[in-house]
Image 1: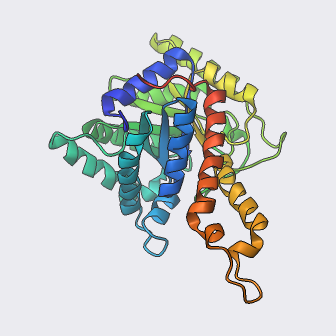
Image 2: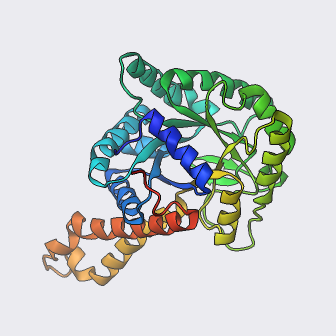
Length: 340
């Protein structure tokens, strides 16, 4: 198996929850970053999730075209073919679609997938995220309820965000303040609106101080215990242990202890982007500095084609990013848990 079917994706989530591990969800923007992610998952013997942001989708369609649907389809098509060679299973996911981008991105993708399902095919993506963190919770959940119904028709899983992740990602920015901490009341409101599985499966990003991007130690105060408190409070109300399938946003830069506690409290997916971006770029920088007179035609010389061939530094970039993904799999305990 390469790309997960809807049934296999549900199995992946169930296995993670039962086994107390989580999948790295790696943002990809190109064929090279997809290859790097697949390499990392394969080396860790872990299944995983490849995800596309709105900016990543626009970039993949061509930086002068910026068609987010076309870019999403292109990345999914490449991943579907390339993943066949790596011996692991990956799911495809769209990440952080805010309200203003729904009609130009996720709703068209869901419509395409619902049509595919009607024709007896599997959806191209396995899940989509609606990020309603920049609107009131009531409105967030009304839209999420509608999208959950569309997701069921498309045989995909919806991801929602209840609370606010600080920092900036793809032009969406939030302040670092008390809104970064989801409450038990927020969790109860979510279950009241979306159910606990009977209306369709969904993943929930409950926030516990998460911040996108890179930050120094001490700048962000993560409180993973909030996840356990909300799981307990909601679970007691509806008679279901650990009712939420949780997502950890802003995972780059987190400590091993913070990651471990979050996974213990029900996290089955952790987003990682900033760290893998750096891991991809750093070897390229080293190559350029080391081979300065080879990658540039200096003082009338001709340079060294083997040095400036994109494959030379591209392989280094992919290996660097793959190694960071191996590390993420180990910290999230998914290493060695691939299906089959």
